Image 1 (cartoon, rainbow, N blue to C red):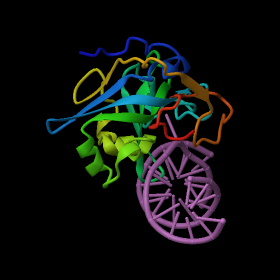
Image 2: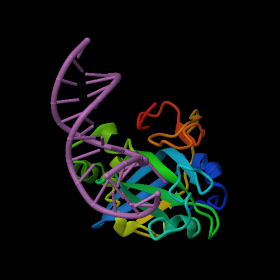
Image 3: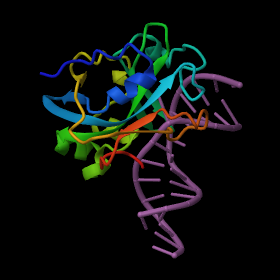
Length: 190
DNA sequence: CGGCAGATACGCT
DNA sequence: GCGTATCTGCCGT
């Protein structure tokens, strides 16, 4: 039985690489879906690109509510994305999960993704939310508990972490706060 | 395969 | 009003 990570109470930039190799487990109508995290990005309140940068509001309060909760947000009028909140209560930070390697429940994911398959199921933050049926009903969900959990995992022998700049932002574009597993085919973008 | 435009709703200015 | 932590389809090579 995999355990909940014990390293979430530190800066998001430190947590982001540690989440690589960990697992996301989701249960829908008795069917289990799971995936392995292969790409992350850190967002902190001191960072102009972070939703938490302008202080706590109704929409971003999960980022300020302590570590281990799901901060799910809606963007571009049609997509959800998902972060793991990090750090102490009162500090607004989180790690965006950008890509997964699908493990269990591929059939359900394929239906959720309208017939897409292979690496296209979960190689992007909004794609993996659609595949795993993550929407605003899970905003604030405790990731220690079913039906949506985060569990500890490791890198495989030979896997290396690449650190680079983040994707899709227009502020703080030079900060190297994106991490992914090198040569993993499920990473969203090289 | 790479580049670009369009979709579409919400919060903040 | 405007910009957005994105994806998809359509176009050209």
